[in-house]
Length: 184
Image (tube, rainbow, N blue to C red; front, side, top):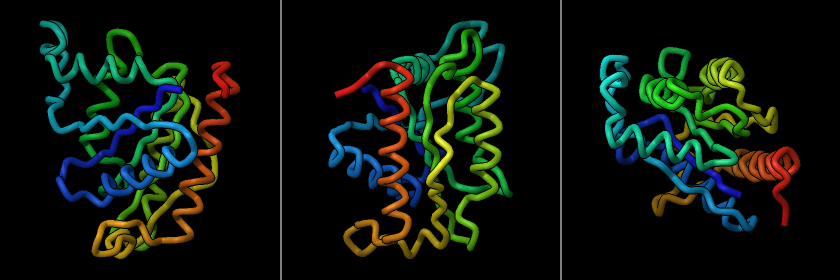
């Protein structure tokens, strides 16, 4: 199964990038690999740039989305929505042939506040549905106060969220396998 992982944050020590790394480790323990793609090199979407030809970083990202059977998207929450970085990436892969169509997605995220990306994930679900992405509905992975969810070595220590990550990934793998005829 080809699984792509993206985090909607650019910061080197992003908590959501750490959450994605944790999810990749869980996936590995379940017998699957998540190929993480950093969004840092994507330029801001511009139809004039697209008309002149996709920049190399955009072409590479579009190929990664096309390659994937499933996608793990980890989003921060900015102003009750997803980050501009994540929306930009979604836009680049949805124009001139929607590379998202038919993918299965698991979404999760964390924030330093008390609500753990509840609103951002709701908004992301709306966007993905329009792009013909099947979003695994539960378990929800909302990590409030994510700054407290890692120990000094970077290990994820939020036990409730860790169980939810494992459950969500299992459901992602089962759903993707059933829908795409991929199985072990």
